[in-house]
View (cartoon, rainbow, N blue to C red):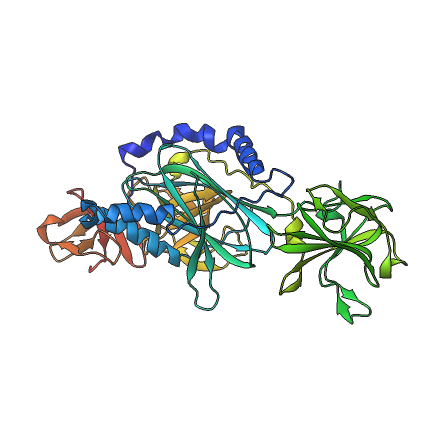
Length: 461
């Protein structure tokens, strides 16, 4: 951890235009829309190769004479250790962050997903625009707590994929060796299907999955959308009509199978059916008209829409239909705060697992606790503590570490460590004399000696 920036970091503020202006918002919106051409139907979900770009890059480093260099070992260790981070964010999410090019680092964000969502990840290189970043998506195994890679960026800075199972996913970002700088990361979600009634959205759903039916003798296995009789019911995705028929509960129904997405869609209570079994349809094609046939004869006209997976039965269709919501772009008035050291400026500050006052606390930290600012989301900083714990802290609780806290006198009996509690000590006459305290953490002090040496010192006085 360092208390001041090197010369390479000073120009960062000139990139403020890219971070906070309409430029990024418009570009973000454009890039996200590229993923949803065809009203949510175009899912970019490629098969994994034997090795990801991350693994290819690591293999190339380890197959050369560089394999024996500490910086290569540090780069590999950074990517592995970050998988243990437990920060959780809520989608949609946008952060502006910074990687110090001279220090191998990686970041990891966990987020909850639901089956039927499409996740869109976009990374923008703001300062070092030629830097190569590796984006990997992992799925959490709830039984053993391990992360398994399921997707990665096969083009620079973008990943788009369909969620197969509800759970927790994690995004790891790591720049190549000796590159980094300011970047922005956006993670957004949307349903993989278009809405089955033109002009309607999820706001028009009147009955949801799991609502009681027949005096609570059964549960609702779909959603109901009320509309005027005769309103067109449209295909929520491309596919083939599997069945057109009539049954006691659904009345006039249409079954559409989407082999690409891997499930069947059920359209019920239709007033009339306008397709035939075996017919191929495209997104938005009219399948029938809204009615109230079947057991809906005593209710107002509406569409019952359901989704069925082979071998699993009915699943909640709501996530499949969610609209795209763009994240709020984080504005950074002074981007030089990114990548620098800061101090807790209040008597006690809460460091949290997520950028929210309602999220779990990592701990309470006293005034002058030293942290490193890694990124910014809204009014929150993503920070690292000296013991490598990561968390979020509200921006008003920190101030840049620009001036010494106080002076202390070191003796040959004292020792300082470059890293907090994890490196060989430096002691003796090389550090004795006056030193300045730049920050604190758990009864240790980050000092700079009169000889310009910085490190962690535990007072023996």
